[in-house]
Image 1 (tube, helix red, strand yellow):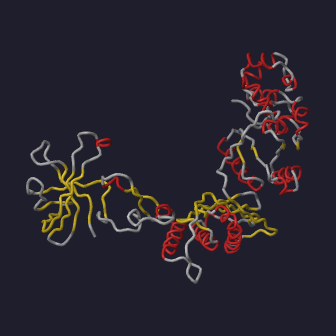
Image 2 (cartoon, helix red, strand yellow):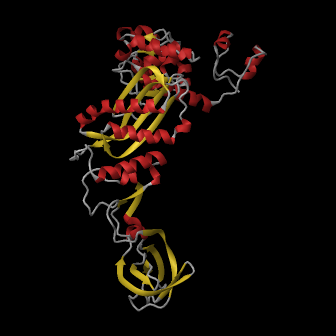
Image 3 (cartoon, helix red, strand yellow):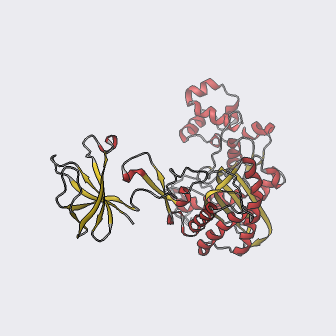
Amino acid sequence: MRLTALDEMAETLGLRRNQGVAEARAMYPVLDVVEEDRDADRRLLDGIADWCDRYTPLVALNGPGGLFLDITGCAHLFGGEKALLADLLSRLFQMGLDVRGAISSAPGLSFAASRFGEGGVIADEDMERVLAPLPVASLRLEENTIAALRKLGMKQVGDLIHAPRAPLTRRFGAQLLLRLDQALGRDEEPVSPRRPVASLSAERRLAEPVQSQEDILVLTGQIALSLKAGLEERGAGGRVFELVLFRVDGRVFRISAGASQPLRDARRIAALFNERLQAVHDDLDAGYGFEILRLNVVRHEAFEAAQEDFDGERQNQVSLAGFVDRVSARLGADCLQGFHLRESHVPERAVTAAPAIHALPSGKTSPARDVFLSRSARPLRLFARPEPVEASLAEVPDGPPESFRWRRMLHRVSRSQGPERLAMEWWIDGADARARDYFRIEDASGHRFWIYREGFYGQMPPPRWFMHGVFA
C-alpha cells in the first residue's frame, strides 16, 4: 500500500506521494491513513465541474484532481480574468476546498503553474519566465521520461527550453517537445468539454435565491422568452431543452425536456418544465434556494412557420404535439410509442417503434409516409414474433385452412382473402428462407386474423402456419 494523497501537515512532515505506508508509519507511528475511495473522489470532482459551469460551459476533466476551464469570451462577465479567478477560488475555499488555479493562453502552462507553481494570471510575455523554474514533472510527462531527464541533470523546464531539440527527440521521442511547446503556447491544445455544448443558452442570476416551483417556472418562462430572438436568427426551434439550477451551496440540478416539434414559444417551453418538475418533485431539493437558473437549447432543428388562428395558436397538429410533449415530460419518453418506416417488405421489419416524441412528424409530411397518423392496411396489432397455429386441411395449392387452433382455441374459417405472397430477404435470412403466403381470415364469431403459410405443399419440409396479427 502506498500514499496517494497528502494533506498540508503530511507535506510539512516530509512525506511524499507513492511512498509506502509501512515506511511512513515507521517514520510517524501515529500517522492517520484513510483508504482511498476513487469513486467518491470522482463524484466530488464531477460535482465541482458542474458547479464550474457558472463560469463557462466548456469544462473538462484533467487528471484525478484537476479541471480545465476554457473561459474564452467569458472573463468580461466577471470583471476580468483576475476577478474571475479570485471569485472562483474564494467560493471554493468557503466550501472547504483548498484549490489553486492559473489562467493563461496555454492549457499546459495553466496546468504547470497551478500544480507546481504559484498560479495566478500569466500574461503571454511572461510564459517562459514562469515556466522555466518549474520541475520537468510539470510538463505532464511519463515517469520514466522524468526519471531519465533527472539523471541527465535536467530537473527544471528551463534546462529544456534552450537545449538542442534534435538530440532530445532522438532520445526521448516527440512527446517531450510536444508537451514543451504546448506549455509555451507554440502548439495548440484543444480542451474537450465533459458535456455537449449547448447551441444556445440564456441564464438569470438572482440577487435573492428562489425555492418554490412557481418562482422557478416564472423565471424559466422569462429566460425562454429571451431565447426566442436567437432561435429566430437561426431559423430554428428547440427540440431538447435543459434547465440548469445552481443551488447556493454549490449543488447543481439538471432537468431535461424534449419536444415533438421545434419550439420557440416561451409558454410551451415553460409548460414542458412544469410537467418535468412535477415528475422530479421529490428529487429536487431546493435547500436554501437557487441563485442561478440557466436554460440551454441542447438540440435544435429548422423551424417551419405556419399560419396561426386568431388566438395565436396553430391548429390540430399543435394540440397533438402539445399532448405528446406533456405526457412524455411527465411520464417519460417511452410512455407513448410511434413508428418509423423502414425500407423492408417483411412485416416485422417494415416499421420500428420509437418514442412518440421522436416519431411525430415535425414538418410537412406526405400522408403516405406518415405512419404515426395514418391508418395502415396491416393489422392493428402485429406480433413481434409470429405464433405457430395448428391448421386443418387447406385448399391445395394456395387456399386458406378450413379451421385452425390458436392458443388452445379452435376457430372455423368463414371468410378469407388472399394469398399475399412475400418472399423473404435473402441477404438477411439466407438463400434457404421460405416464402410466406398471407391470408386475412374471419372466423364464425366475426374475429379477424392475419395468418400466413410458410413454405408450399408438395415440398419438404411440409409448410407451417403462423399467426402474425389481429385486426380490430
